[in-house]
Image (cartoon, rainbow, N blue to C red; front, top):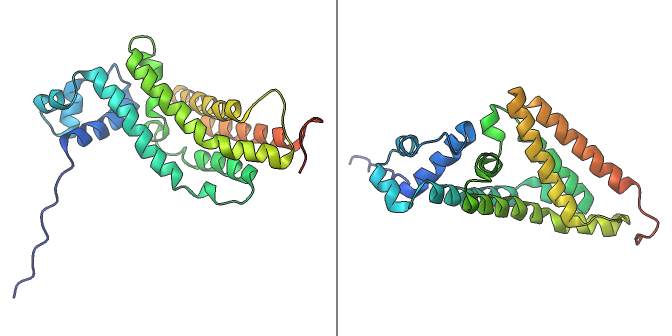
Length: 213
């Protein structure tokens, strides 16, 4: 008896292929320079299929930002930096994890939504809002650990867990801009190293009016 042949693999739906193509191409070329024709060619779909799923290119940009949030959200939720018992160690482990991701070609480690924001923040309010939601949504995942670390280590002041979480993203996005300017990862790695030292210093010096454990 001959062995049964495995069923042929089914390609992802056209919409998913277009979103994955958008993630790849926009990180390399930027949103404005990436054409619908290039997206269709990279996804292996027709222009008719593109306009079946997206009203226009801006709609694709909004959907790509949402897709990025979902996929990276799942990636970071499963990452090992959540393991330490001490919340400060979790925050520092997050920074170490982000540093370890800065490798390879610039387009491989830079942020899709940061790239789109730099490109169309004035010309496409819908994309800007979707990208802002993605960035602040990711920052919000750090707030609980930062807040717990502040309480456990007796640290406070005129800043909040939310503002520090947003600052981490500001440094990371700036680091990616430096990487693009320099054509490689080293400047971005050094920026994350400085950010880690800054967080360590914040928690090394409790304020006089902060609660102590």
